Length: 143
Ligand SMILES: [Cu+2]
Image (cartoon, rainbow, N blue to C red):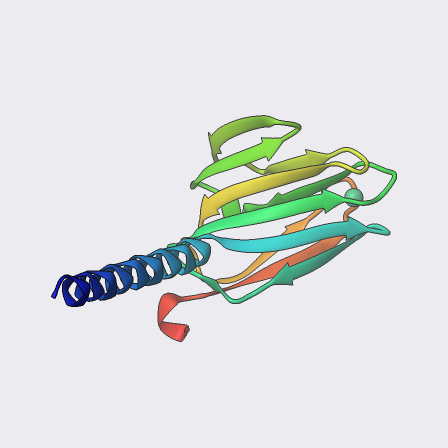
C-alpha cells in the first residue's frame, strides 16, 4: 500500500517537474524572441549587415563592429525622435534623437531601441559618404 502511494507521488512529482521544465523552455524562447538582433560589421569601408525580418514594436538591438584600421561612423535617421540607448566602451548613453555612433578602429557598439516605423531605413558613414547600407522593417501584420 505504501509502495503504491509513493509511486503515485513520484508520478505526480515527475509531471510537475516536466511542466516546470516546459514552462521554462517556453519562457526562454519568448525571451529570445523579444529582442531582435541586427549584426553590422564594417570591413574594407563597407557595411555588412546580417538581419532576420524585423518586426515593429519590438526591442531591437543593432551591434556594430568596426573591423577596419580607420575610424567609421554608423548614423541613421531611423533613431530620430525615439528613445535610444547606445553602449560603447563600457559606457551606456541614453538619448532621444541620437544621430548615430562613432567607432574607432577594432571597436564595437550596441544600439538599442524600439522599431516604430516600417520600411527601408538607410544608414551611412558620415566620414565616408560612399558608405551606406539599409535595414528592412516589416510591419507586424506582414509576418
Ligand atoms: Cu567610414
